[in-house]
Length: 600
Image 1 (tube, one colour):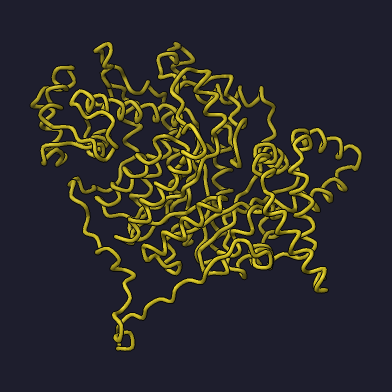
Image 2 (cartoon, rainbow, N blue to C red; image 1 turned 120 degrees about the vertical axis):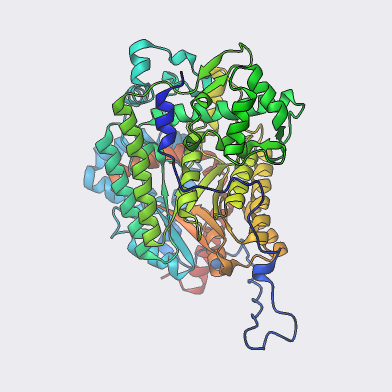
C-alpha cells in the first residue's frame, strides 16, 4: 500500500554501508591533539613544540579595524552607514532609486551606486572585478566566501504564482488532497513570495530545470573562484536553487512525521520532554506498540532491528529510528505512519509522476556535482539554511553529502539556525551520528534569517511558532550549540564550526572558550564570518591576530544586484541603525588620518 514515490525518493539517498553500532567511534583523548610537550622536552628531536598563545584581540581599535581601507572608503562608509540609520530613507529606498535612475540616466545612476551603497556592500560586477578586494583582504588575514547575489526582480504576484505551481504536485493539481498535509508543509499563497521578512538571504523561485542548471553553473564558478583565490576557501549554495521545491516540502513532511511518531511513542513510555539524544525507547515496548497499531508483528519488527544491528542494547534512540527510513531496509510499511489520534495508517508521500521523479533526481545530481568540484578545488561547501518547511529535507540531504565527502576532513558544512527551538537537538543528533560513523562534522551557526516570516506564517496558518521567544533565548541557544561543538573539537579534532555572527559578545565568548579548551587558531577548526561592509571592527582584528575569518562577498552587475541590495537595506535597517559603534570608529580613524597628515 505504501507509496512507490517514497521508495524512489529515499532510494537516491543511498550511500556506502555505514556502521549501525551505537558505540562511539574511537576518539583521541581530551586535549591530545594540541597537548604541548612537557617542560624541558620541547627541544628534543621529534617532540612537538608548544604553540605560542594567540595575540589578544581588541575590537575597539579603529586603526586595526580599518587599516585595509583607503580614506575615501572610510568616508564612503560614514556616509552609507549614516544614511542607513535614517529609517524613512531606507523604507523608501526603491522609490528613491527609481527616481534617481530617471533623473540621472542609467550610466550616471550606476556610477552613483558604485560610489555609495553598491560600492560599500558589493565587491564588484564579476569575478575579475572582485579580485583586488579579495587579494587585499587576504593580505590582512581575511578570506572570502563568494556570493553571486543576482536575484530575479519578480513582482509579488509572479513570485506567488511560481511558488504555488512549483510546490504543488501533479497529483494534487489533478485530484486535490493538499489539505491533507500538515499545516506547516502546505503551500500558502499569502506566503508564496518568500522574499518578505528575510534578513541577508537570497531567494530562488523555481522556473524550470534549465534555470536550475544555470544556478549550478553559477555555483561552480564561485567554487572555482574561491579555490583559485586561496587555499582554504569557502563557497555557499542554496538547495532551492537546484531543483523543484515540491520535493523538499514533501520530504520534510516525511522526516517530521517520522520524528514526531518517535516522540509520541517515547511519551507513551513515560519519556516525554527529554533531550533528543537522551530519549531511548525500550525495544520490547516499541514492538508491542507497533503490533498494536498494525504496523508490524513482533516477529517482523524483530527482523527489522536485528537486520540493521539496532536495539542490541535493549533500547532504540532517535538515530537508530531515523536509520530505518533509509531505503536499504526496503520496509515499505515504514512509508506509512500511524495517526495516534485516529489509529489509521497515513501515507508519508504522495505518488510522484515520472517527470517529478526525474526532477528530484536531477536536484540530487546537481548537489553531487557541486560537492565533487568543491573537493577537487579544496573548497569547503556551506549549504545555507532555509525556511522550516524546507529545512528537514535540506539538512537530511546535506547529511548524506557529509557522509560521502567528509571522510578525511570537513568539506560539506550544514547550517543551523539558532533562533529555532529545535536547533540544539538537531545539531547534537547530527554530531552524534558523525561520531558513530566516523566522518568529520562541519557546522555553520547563525542566529537565523527568516524570523519575521516564520512567526507570521505560524500565526496565520495555525501551527506552533518554531522560533525562540526572545533574542536573549536565541543567544543562549547559539552559545549552547557553539559550546557543544567546541567541546567536540577539543576531544576529537574531527569537528569544524563557522561562527557566522556580527555579535561582538558571541565572538568574545568563542575566543574565551577556545582559550579555555586549548583550541589554537592555527588548527583552523573554528572560523568566523561577517558580511562585506559590516562589522570590520570584528573581522580585521581577528584576521590580524591569526584567527581564520571570512567576509561574505556579494558580487554581480549593478542593476541585477539592486533588488537584493534594496531588500537587504530594508531587512537590516534595525541592525544598521544600531551600528553606532562602527560609525564612531570610522570617524575616529578618519580624524586620526586627518590630524596626522596621512589622509592621502
